[in-house]
Image (spheres, rainbow, N blue to C red):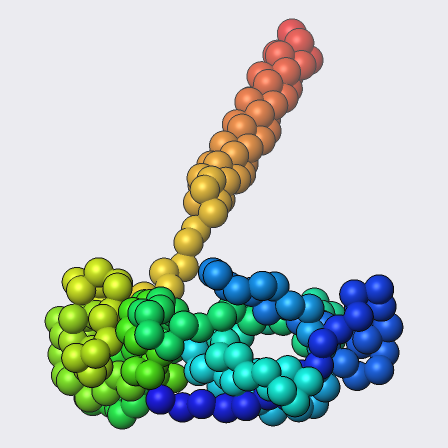
Length: 239
């Protein structure tokens, strides 16, 4: 079990949290079953270094005012939504003789043959699982070797995760942790003819032809009429 220490001080609750942050201090609360809640504060940079190592699933020993030592987990760490700075922390008491439940992250290692050789896409369905164990058996994370993903039909399930016998994983054993999906096939783009385009061209051509025929017929008829008229005039002269 990893264990880290963090120096903290009792906090005067009359002082505003914003005033503490202005002095590079983080306000925090300590609580738990059967213990008295405590309002504490700590140096910003000191907590940042400790939390970077411990995260939310490593026991931290708080040294309150350099005297009292308390085993805790960083249960809730609040961040500023704009700057991502730590603004408040809740520490949960840890009883060393009692089991606890917490979430640990999954660390994917190796290269999946189905990705390297078949150009598949790795899919990770979860990045953490919930575990139950004694504080002394608490782990920081679980390694998941994805080299067993040889085909697209291969899966890594919760039941395949390797942990100590002293740790119980609470997730459904059949839940899929990771698999490799087949690459998507690119579909050929087929040019789409806008509805009515061919009909318009055909109509225009037909109209043009009909117009030409109509014009030609009118001229012909007109010519015939002129001929008939000319014949009548000629007949009149002969008489």
